[in-house]
Length: 494
Image (cartoon, rainbow, N blue to C red):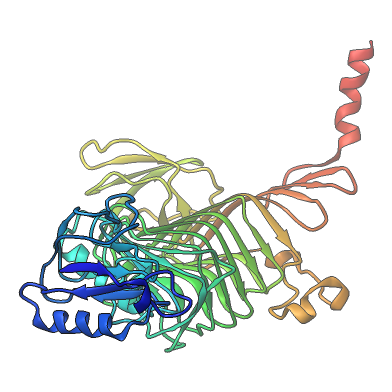
């Protein structure tokens, strides 16, 4: 289409310049009529955007004066541009500058969502952003379906979004919010999960609000996540609600690693769970902060996790491991000592931290595999480190995945004071219950080092350093630091 500059006499008051379109847009009569209608309206103060919907557009013979050129988007006299493809925009600004998003301005596999967007938009740049996250995810999933090994990123601009959930992300889709203070995501269906994630998914910079039990902000799809080789990653997010959970990792809904990882995830779920891991699901948790949760981190039915540089504040329970999963394999207990057992008829070498159930016919005890020898004639010698509390019967034994939490450097602050922040703090009447920091039930285990609100340091249940009294306490000794150090001091002085 030819573009000519109107004479000064035709320029409305206040306008810098105005362009008149005298054009034929090849293969798109509807777009040509729209272009002529826009041109003839002579609205010079606004920017005119011509959407190319169904055809290619050729722009010929630019004859305007004083039109700047920048990054191949703006053109001067006698310069031409062709092949603006369907779905792109030509922008003709009031000052005479001509641009398009067709050349160099659109990143591949990137979509945008904003509160000023429209779900009928393509979402491929900020000026054509989607209005809802759900619509952008549908588009992203389509991109991933055509290139399953690729990655698609959805950028969410500041705003409060109420979404038709669950929002199901295909493998390789990332959600990136402006930041967790400015982007809130709420569920239209409050008892359903907000986001479902799969292999290689990534979510950051969001705050999840108002989801209710049994919903989690992040979970595997109810139909299954498929094979997990690269864990979904949640980073720098917050969950703020009542009975909902921040993240649910159900191993029954995935294969492979059955895992998720997170970093810097705050759980202010007053009466809800922080992180819930079940059915042999697995998670690596770094810098997770739970506040007023009914349980900060709970592993059930063989769920396991590692926790680093994290805390549990207020709430009812801190770290809770409960129960075991379904039987993994069986063997025959042939003999035992105080620290080893010999098991035959095995089909696989016992793995570290598999639990073996021993029984004397009345009482039973789970012991954990610390190490095992390779199978020789289907027999392995298993080493364990705990005390046998029973004299086990020889014969058939079963091995199970145990619910296990391994936490290093964990901080407990006023655990046991309750799930309402208005009554949980000490000045508002909250009284901490030290026994609620760690809970082990039905064979579950929590291995931990921790510090509490008094500065007391614990290495599991067997060793406590009492900061105020300067006392080391343990299951087999109770001696003051002074009594321990004095002989060494005297020896050095002598």
